[in-house]
Image 1 (cartoon, rainbow, N blue to C red):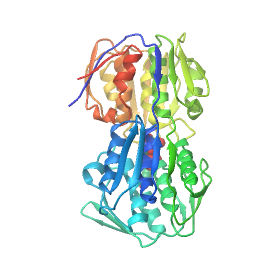
Image 2 (tube, rainbow, N blue to C red):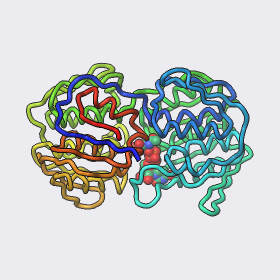
Image 3 (cartoon, protein in one colour):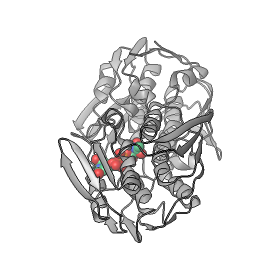
Image 4 (cartoon, rainbow, N blue to C red):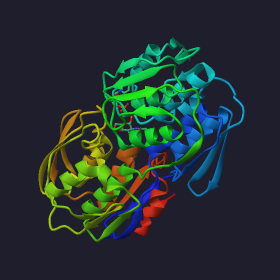
Length: 420
Ligand code: UD1
């Protein structure tokens, strides 16, 4: 199993490029089930979750061809079965995005409960998806840990999501495109990846309004065309690099190919804690700061402070002067990784599974550790780069799932990180 070996406290400076968004890419591959025409996707991040999504498509009878670096053509060849394979579905939660399009295209889909990061109590539920498909006329059977959904023709419906969910919003938007009649989705998530997905679907002939607001309307059409889709920059990766540069505070770091408008909540926090930065339309420059101060942060659905940046921000607070309360409002296991930070020397008190108090600044020290999940893994890389001595990080598949060749890109900034 591959590991990262990191020698901390090297000055970080220079330029780093942001990849295409993982969370946008994973939603585009299932759309290919809804058209017989070719889809060409640009700026695809070459990460493990994307490879697994491509393998699912190939298994269902599609051809996925790499045309160039980050450019893939997807084309329907012939349908092979109704089942999503457990070994791939277990690896990432966004595999659930295939369910709706398979129901539309094949009238039937069988799948196990999707896997992914263990950041909620027990398994991460899919009740919102199942309720919505049922409202659209699907029959749901659950047998031996497998779901079987069938529908001759899905019908438009009025759906209120009892919780705000990014993937459930995206799944139902995609599914409703070819349903009979109109679908109204209420209490939708408003993430930029949803707006981007809808722009693409509308470009292929879909009739969707309201993306980026809580109410989205979809008028069913007969067929979708193929087309070209350029994946938006990964805002989580951009934010992770910005936090790393701020925490290291050792030189100028230019983060290129990103959209700083997608990270307004982070800039507000940076203003409060004294990070020196300059934004342009597509770049972020982090400059050395005099002193980093502490500031409380609570995660929130977009446009609030994203839960995916909570773990890197918590590491930043270990280097800030004062105490900060970090409140994780969305997932109840996403603060558990702070135990590892404490073992590295951080002063963190857990009030309850949703809240920790970080007292800073503290020195961090390298040690042997295991990456618990994708975003905590990235946060632990930041901690290791700040730490005195050597850190060994195991289970880096969890980091490779979402960050393409992170070690190579960090070395460009001067980091001492090796993959063995
Ligand atoms: C997406 C992102 C992930 C991010 C998260 C929150 C992708 C691939 N992943 O995950 O990076 O951390 O949004 O911004 O886009 N819920 C239910 N029932 C459901 C579905 C969700 O109760 O059927 C709950 C979840 O347990 C959680 C909340 O809704 O408490 C939000 O989850 P959700 O938005 O669905 O997360 P993902 O879309 O999986």
